[in-house]
Image (cartoon, rainbow, N blue to C red; front, side, top):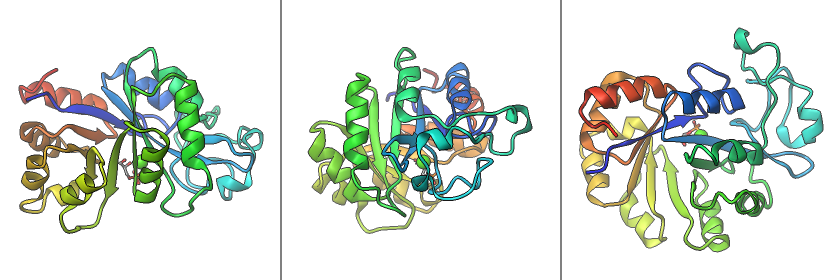
Length: 248
Ligand code: G3P
Ligand code: CA
């Protein structure tokens, strides 16, 4: 059984501002195998790394990201209320993060944030950026919007894909297999309900669980041998994985 991989959720977001360069650098230093990030689109069509559709929660600005150009967004600090970073942290573009991660040989899970506002052409632009940065082999795509995943499959045959979901659906493995999707990304809460972890494991699909921060939950999933955990605290996950005997 391959050891469970550790993906840093929005970077090492337990310690550094989520979805920013410092958070991704810290994830690498802490020994994560991969990073998870969210993409949205600006008014001028730039693909940026940000979780929410608005910039209010994590930045010094206000309003929907799609109403700002990249240049305008760069005027705000995205330090997410973390005083250590209050000097200013810029919103990164997807290209900048991929350029950073390429030499680390880390996997990058790009989550297409098209579940609330479906940015026209986000899938195509994202695919182009990944290709331009030579990151096809390091990237896997996920989304709660499964039409976005279908579009990625159309644009990049052979791309690694996964369905994100948080609700309890009937036969997710059968559904994913029917549409040729490689992996399931369920929430931790579903993995704590009886039967689902076993069912998803048995399917043979990649199984990456989010967002797993507590030591006991990490240990349970390492022992179960899931493909990956997605966590805000990669250092804790690395320690628990070592202690559970499932070391890399
Ligand atoms: O990709 C896993 C997880 O990030 C999905 O939820 O809201 O944190 O993007 P969210
Ligand atoms: Ca995400």
